[in-house]
Amino acid sequence: MYRINRNSAPVLITVDEVVAKGMVDENVDYRYILNSIEAAEGRFIAPLLGDAMYQDMVNEKNVLVTSINHDDLVVAINASLVAAGKDPILGTDLQLGMWVNAIEECTTQNYIDLWNWKLWRIVTEAVQLMMIVPSWTRSTAQGEQQNNPKTIAGNGEGAATAGMKDIQYKVDHMAQARLYPLMAEMKKWICNTGGYTLFDCGCLKDHDGISKRQGGIILDIYEDRNQNGPDMWNFPFDEWRRPHHD
Image (tube, rainbow, N blue to C red):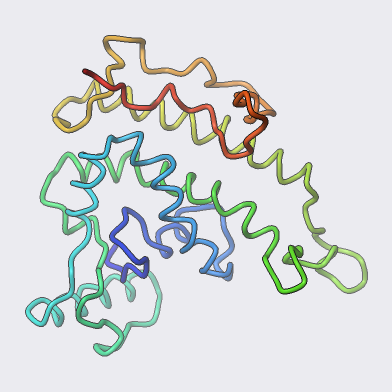
């Protein structure tokens, strides 16, 4: 999927990929996705893959637009957009110095396999997780306000705005029942597949790669708190963190 990377830096996933592959409405405000991508990849994906492998994969999946490759990239982007039923871009929409993101640009087959088989889902889930709270409330001159009215329909019928307990449950569920098990399963898959020389998980030496948190319904992802008090984003995912070797 060739797409313009509208983040300020090269990243693994684009807004279009999150919308196409995630559980989000197509008309969702793209800013909430865009602003969550770097946060999600920095919080979950870079520690999961390790900085070396993450950066190497990011470098392969992104192409800097130059005067030499500009026209070819416009053609590739438009072919991808048309195949997805979307309108093509103009040549002027792609400026020199922009980044174009595409798994097709990867030269390492292992990265292509990893992305297509496992990683795209994990990155999508991580981005969705990170955008839950920002998309629930917005910062205004009057303070924090909910993004939506209490009911979508004016007659009081239809979907209602989620409350704080709903939001916490969704965060808990997406982390514990979806994201963390996917991360653990991918880690085991990488180790069993082999060939990922930049990935040092240590799972075959330390444990079987499957987290004790996998499976079941766990409603409190905030149970691992620091001694100074609760930290709502202190997710207990150290099981998947790459071990540090002296």
